[in-house]
Image (cartoon, rainbow over all chains, first blue to last red; front, side, top):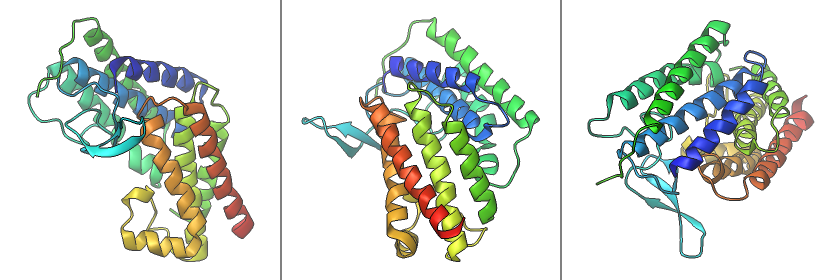
Length: 155
Length: 122
């Protein structure tokens, strides 16, 4: 997806997260945080020229919904655009340090996804704080990156 | 996860979805997916088709055999959760116009799943 659309989603997800109760709404609070972070990583990867910023949408690693000539979306194999989650797919090659740091921070959040959202581990204020702190780091790094000129993706 | 836990989580996520506004179509869709999956697991566990140690996570990650088996239990239920999942790439990960309408549809499908669970077991 294009960078502006990633930034728009981040802005709206963050405004929603402010209205949610961290523990009372933990599942959606966490899911909004995770989606915010994933959009931030995708925007940073596009900005760094590591992935393509185009309006095609991943269904699974390597497969994207692509608009046909009639505008209808059809699945097709494509080179790396948006990742679904950090590591899905892994982006090959050397990445800028700040983008790697964003991805490492996202791993902190992703680590809690299945146990707390789909599993039987109860979320705690400590887990929520750890996720919030990791996301703050991701967004701070994104803001810093967005203040510098970006690169176009080159295969 | 046991059936009762699935029900409680589904109901909690639905309460959170109610806090979403007009601009939050992505999280309405994601909430429908999360809560809907809990209702699917609740129904499958209560029907005795699956046990608490075998939860469906995403319909698209099921094997063909699993999907067939769960569809024997309730084909409309499996079609509903699959349709919610299919909405996600274009409207959650993507920026295709029509997000609010897609969210409305996802919430209708979630209501179908909730009604099935209530009719059968609540």
